Image (cartoon, rainbow, N blue to C red; front, side, top):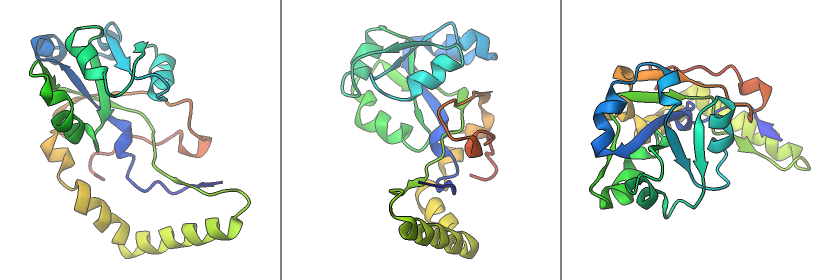
Amino acid sequence: MVISKPIAKNLLGYRILIINAKDAKKFSEIKEAEILKKYVQGIPETWSDAAIFRYNNFIVSEEGNFDDIFKRLSRANFDYVTFGANEVLSVFENRASKLKTLEIESKLLIFYPFPLVFYVNPTMPELAKRVEEGLQIITASGELDAIFNNYYSDIVDTLQMDKRTLFVLDNPLIPNEFANLQPNLVEL
């Protein structure tokens, strides 16, 4: 049972690229999704992102795992990888930066609806009701925003998300009630 209240302002749906530094100029010149679609994105096996990007006609190399994706990127097995705005800085710092040839791309931003929600076992409707009521209470009181801001308040500025060229994709994997989520950097 899905609790239909996204709790992280769709932050995971804002995708930031990590690329080889030698390719920075060609990526910085991309202004249309059709151009980006000519490059190959590396995605670890089994990640749902692969289906989303394929659905939107991107070329995807789906292989390997999270532990080896940056080595494969540095060897130019593909052109870029993407991570959610909520995770890209820590992923880069803890993993990708070890390979001095990689960098966070500074001009592009991909968006698709990818809300973080609670799922409750369907046999536990009382728990679902309590979670939903609790979310309504902390939303109305501003506490949910305070929690979000505590962890992510500077993400738009740090990543300069509002200055990037934005490409909006469809996500065929999410329930219909979330299909119309649109990018809203002001809300972040």
